[in-house]
Figure 1: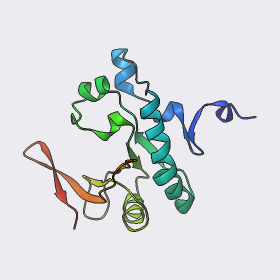
Figure 2: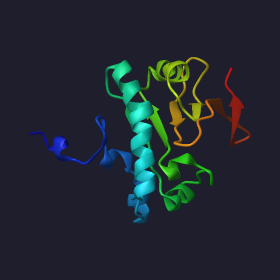
Figure 3: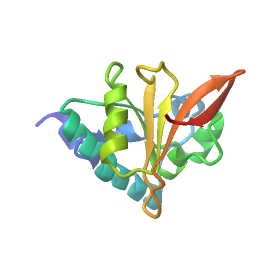
Length: 156
């Protein structure tokens, strides 16, 4: 049996370790452990968005950020209302196929927010997607930098 098979899992293709990984947490010695409600939200997001996407895509998708404790979120300068701190958001990256992932999610899955994060008109640098147990707005945005600040525009 492979050592990876023994790790606790959020879903079939997401280990607990990768869902809670944080260089900033290690650097600052801060816990990045979700509570039961946050863990339940993470599992729901994985079930409703990540796993259907992974099945369709057919190959690994890198998770660049999933759960962030409120302390970690503050330490990195994240939004005070970040869904990452609730276990409801995940950032994913394939480098070359991010537009494909973005379009598939937009056209086929239920989500709360879907954000084309920076990049070019041809491909985002990464894709942010969130899922909520209580409301999913299907809000599609594009993050861009303007005068050194991130602004979110409606996706066209």
